[in-house]
Amino acid sequence: ASNDLQIALERSPSGSVFWCAKGNYKKIRIVKPCEIYGGFDGNEASLEERDWAANRSVFSSVEISSDALIDGVTFAFPPEGGEVSFNNADNPTLKNCRFSKTVSAGPAILSDGCSSPSLINCALIDCRAGASRPSPLILFRSCRNALILNCTVANSKLSQAGSPAIGFRDSTGEVHNS
Image (cartoon, rainbow, N blue to C red):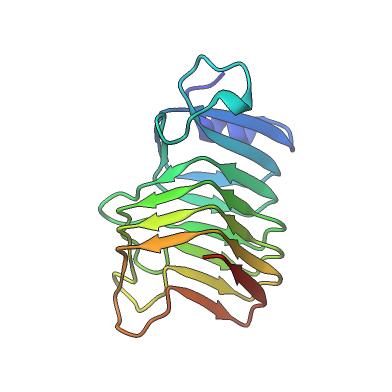
């Protein structure tokens, strides 16, 4: 167990699995394949016992440059903004994540140069994108096989009228039931 997720990520071998207790987590950078699960109160014996709605693991910002799964985490950016960025990663996935009242200078989620980035069962609620430049809430740039599945965008604002909630630039991908 560690009180500092960033140090644990740096010191652990590739493929490590992390269970995050409820609480706030500063910006993290993921450079090795791993799985991060949020929603624990500390008394669970199995992954199935967690409750990410009741035990919010709140991340302020994440940069991913490796194969990673983040599941059951809430993103709440600080007033100066934040984002979740996938950079040249293979198979980065956000699953069962919630973006709540986030403000980002550009997109809230930026996937740049990735292979098979996925957003599954995620919600962007009361978010604002493009605080300093016109941007969609979610932007895939130079990505292959992007997937958005069963995600919700509600009560969110874009800085420029007519900007799409989801943008694909030089990318291929699919959006289903979202």
